[in-house]
Image (cartoon, rainbow, N blue to C red; front, side):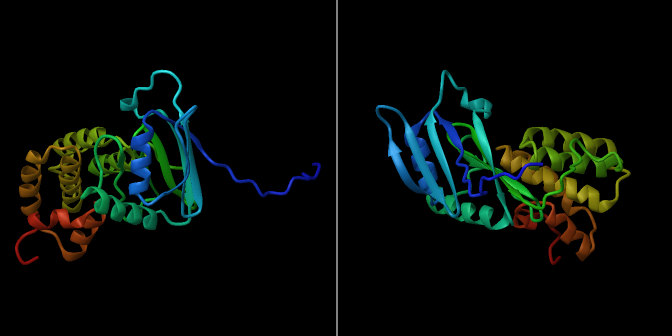
Length: 247
């Protein structure tokens, strides 16, 4: 094989389509990105920098339906995704008073131990932060080695963390709990209920939370089992109202 004379000094900067320059500028500034270039006429060109990477935008071509959330995107490979999610969480709360979890723009949830999360910008682009040591082979759609509610929980995890489909995860858990809830181990039932509490909130359907919470409160869990359940959700404090008093 011939030796490549080119030295590996490349830097690749994603060029994303933009449908709303003002909204894009406001969003990335809110997250703490520096605007390194800003031009709206005679053509659109925006550039942003944060930490060690950059994003650039050009005008979207044709009619773009941002609701489809498939405008474009890029991957940001990092050593550890948790600090990135924490930084953006803090910035969103400071700028918006909350973590944007619905509509556009928004950020997908991060469960401790997960290997990726996604920031969706106002134009429907997905900027996916992925841990470099994420396994090359992932079980998409649920591991065949699992059965019953365990397989449902695994499938819901894939739908949430890799396909960003909270609605499908909610349906899978709701249906799976009905089918397998009576025979599943208590920690699996508790984990499914905890996930449904989190999903009901994320989907803007808080009226279902009391139902799931009441069922969670009825379960008897050891301290270790409770820790397992809490590790399955992004914000364990959301479960505190539903744990038995004194636990």
